[in-house]
Image (cartoon, rainbow, N blue to C red):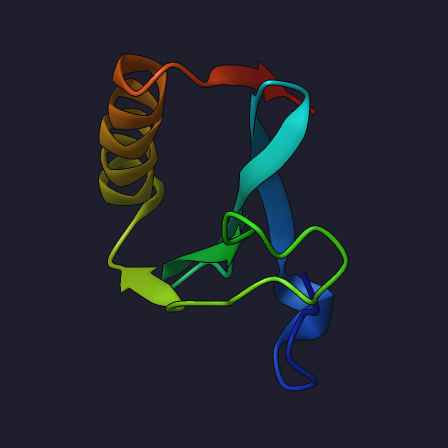
Length: 89
């Protein structure tokens, strides 16, 4: 994830969640707190595209870290339901 130039000094990475299935990366979710908002960046690794660049849907902007955390929690639960192993980094 690349932090934007404006406000980058105020940015604070809250957490990163890395989802894998069968040893292959599926998604990486990173939450960054900018003080007045919180952004979740996503990298999604499509099936069958082992060496290609990940897709980057979003970013997903929230009013605060609680909303961003709720979003990531639901995404992690869905990934686990689909058989992914999700680790904090």
